[in-house]
Image (cartoon, rainbow, N blue to C red; front, side, top):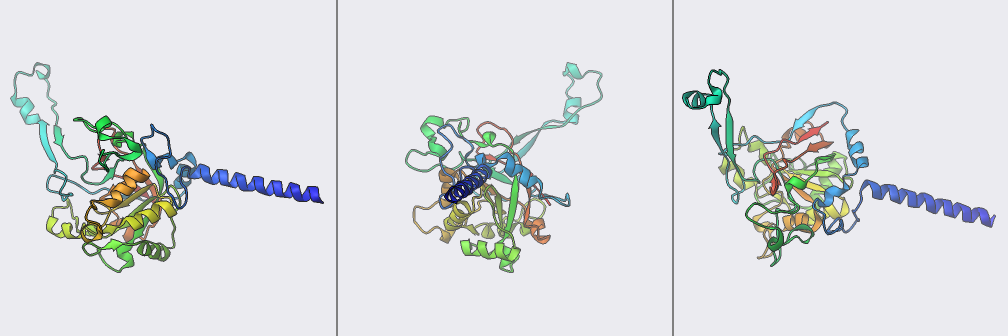
Length: 338
């Protein structure tokens, strides 16, 4: 009898350990109450995206049942609204059919009919629909970013050289929409409204959905209901762009829920202005997420169609251009698949 009891206990422990191993394999690196952090080794450049395991990807691929694709990108041009610390875009015709035909000294085109268009594009790497890379935000006297990479060692005139957007792998994971504007019964949240953990919990409960470790989480403030074709009405957009989450909500989403990417429909995800409690604060949630946790930030994601159709969980697919030294994937076109 005693042998059977011991054998049963050993078997139960083995099952428990196996369960823990499976759980860890699905969301490696995440510790409830702590989040992620600098845990992937001294040479790591992708942070929480290390948690995107094949198991997580395959689980996310099972979500779509209708095949309906939602375009989460906003259209962008030289007059579009952007955060005031970034420059606008200029698209300049580099080659035109008319110009090529007018220029008679291009021997390789002699006797040829076809011509082409091509452009030179001058653009900031933090505009339009984007994902901030881990090299975007620095902190401390040494201007370090994620994993302790320092400006003195890895900065330069041709872009940072560690943990930038070109190192980000394609993102394929479960996406979750938290419609805070919808929870409040508002088209868009008011200026400088701080979204609290209580707001997030209430919205998730109303939507009957929860967050799983390894998810990409998107928070709707409703600002992009004002975007129109290209986001030209800056006077209307600017005041609402200051609504967003605070550090408390960022910590809850990462440390208690295990999100690897936090996104919103604003230019900066977090609440600004009066939400900054300390005189030294400047985008404190960015510092916490990017520099301390290695968790990515998505901005200007178009969430209006998802909210209209009450799509609260979906397959999220995104990939950044592999431009060396870029501090964000910019003017992107991510998709949510229902």
